[in-house]
Length: 361
Image 1 (cartoon, rainbow, N blue to C red):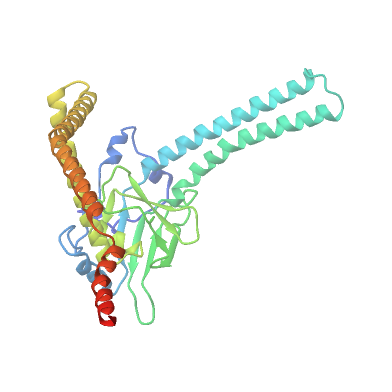
Image 2: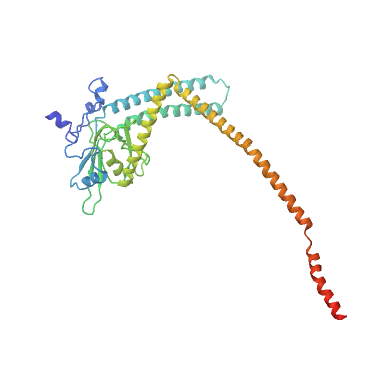
C-alpha cells in the first residue's frame, strides 16, 4: 500500500539528497520506465471537451497539482557527464595552449624584438584563454541545467480580487539544499508560439520525438524544462491553453489541424510502403524516374495533340483568308462605281436651274 501511495502524484516527498540524483544501478533502462499512476479525481485524458475540463479546474478552491515529472536521475547523469567532458577539455586546452605559448615566446622563431615579442605573447595568451573558457562555460552550463528542470506544477485558482497563479518547483544547484519554489501569474510562464505540448500520442497525449518542452518566463532568456514523461492533469490540451495566450477555440482548432496533418502523414507513409514493396531496393529513385517518364509522355501527347489540331484547322483558316480577301475586293469595287457626293448634288440641282430659265423666257 505504501508503494502504491508513493506512485500517486503529489503523495511522495521530494527530497534533494545525492541518492535522488543518481540511479541505484547501471541499468539505466529501468529509470526510463514510468512510475507515476494517474491521480484520483482528475478528468480522464481525451474524454472531455477542453472548455469543460478548464472549467472544472477553475472551480477548484485549493491549489491543484497539475503536473509532476518522473525522477530526473537520467537528466542528472547526462548533464554531469557532459559537464565533466567539457571541463576536462577546457583544462586540457588551457594547459596545452599555455605551454605552447611559453615555448613560442622563448624560441622566438620570428626573431621579434622588444614590444613586438611581448605583443605576440599577449595575443597568443588571449587566444588560449578564449578557447579554454568556451568549453569551460559550456561545462558549467551543464552543471546548472538541472536547476531549470520542473518537478511539480500547481494551479492556484483565482479568488476574490486575485487572479489565477501557477506555482512550480525545481532542483537546487547543490544537493541537500531547500527546494526552489516559484510562483507567478497565469500568462507569465509561456511556451513557445510554435511549440505544441499536446500531440495526441500517449496516455496524456503529450508524447513526441522530443522528450521535453520549454516554458519561458516573460523577459527571461533561459527557459525552464518540463519532461513529457510524467503526470498531466487532464491532457496536454490544458497545458497548451494555460501556458499560451490562445483561446479555447484556437487550441481545439489546432488539435483538429494536427489530427488532419497526422492523417495526411499516415496516408503518405502507407503510399511509401506500397511503393517500397512495388519497386524494392532504391524505390525512391525508381519512383522518381517513373514520374519523369510519365511527365515526358504527357508533354509529348500534348505537343502531338496541338500539332494535329493545327493541321486540321489549317484548311479552314485558308478558306477564311480567301473569303476575307474576296470580301475586300467586292467592297473596293462598290466604292469605285459609286458616284461622288458632288456629282449627286449637281444632278439634283440640274432640273431646278432649267425651270428658272424657262420662267424667265
